[in-house]
Amino acid sequence: MLFGALEAGGTKMVVAIGDENGKILEQKSIPTTTPAETMPLIEEYFKRKDIKALGVACFGPIDLCRESETYGYITSTPKTAWKNYNIVGELKDKLGIPVGFDTDVNGSLLGEITWGCAKGLTDAIYLTIGTGIGGGVMTNGKLLHGMLHPELGHIRLGKLPSDKGECICPYHEDCFEGLASGPSIEKRWGKKAVELAENDNVWELEADYIGMALSNFCMTLSPQKIILGGGVMHQKQLFPMIRAAFARYNAGYINTETLKNLEEYIVPASLNDDQGIMGAIKLAMNEYEIN
Image (cartoon, rainbow, N blue to C red; front, side, top):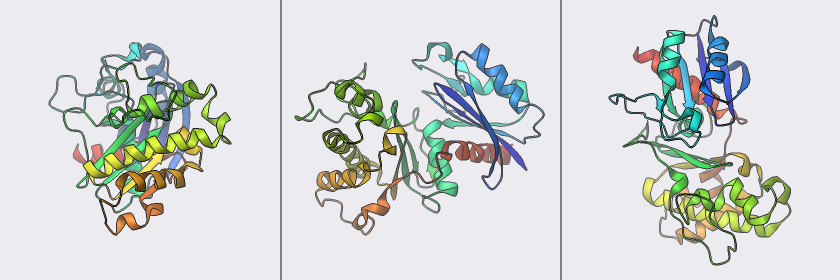
């Protein structure tokens, strides 16, 4: 049985065909420009593929409330061409198949829960740290939506005294994304993160902010595992530094068997950067089952 997957990002749309085992059979990338230009290319890709359903893991904010008049819309995105755009309605209309829908980060988490390093767990967090910072949450075996969906990148951290840079978020003066995303690193240090691999000062500060945030998520959401993905996390030297910062901020307060092995608790994404597409396949499978 074949399913379609769309990982909808702000710079590119990754489209793919997969099966019920999460195997990606083919995929391609389409530039994200405007709906008028991009959507016909996506629809043409999926036509005549004999897919049973399509899963969309999408940049946001998005409306995930099925009872809402704007369910399936991309809502107040800064990507102005896509603001208040009914992406699910458009795909359903043109393809005539069920369309599953969730955030891009929830999609990545679903991929890891179904086929990756969080398989078998009921409570986990997936964070992407790159151009922005976003997080997907599964609690009690269900992806967390709530009023909208979690915006873990915009929790307030408080600027560290050693940080001589500035928060780049236009909404907050000290949020996680504004202090620790890839563009924040570039603004603070004058170079892209990939060019700063050998500068220990860069990564000590970055690890401090990430460790602080993960401590907050551990306290509030009590995940069984925290998975870190995104471009910044390709700096593998960060992981032991983040674990050390997390332990410092936790300060022994939460003392469980799980936290005795932080190498198994705070981990890199495990699906070769395909977790988003694989999660979208699972979204399609879930939507097919309920239709």
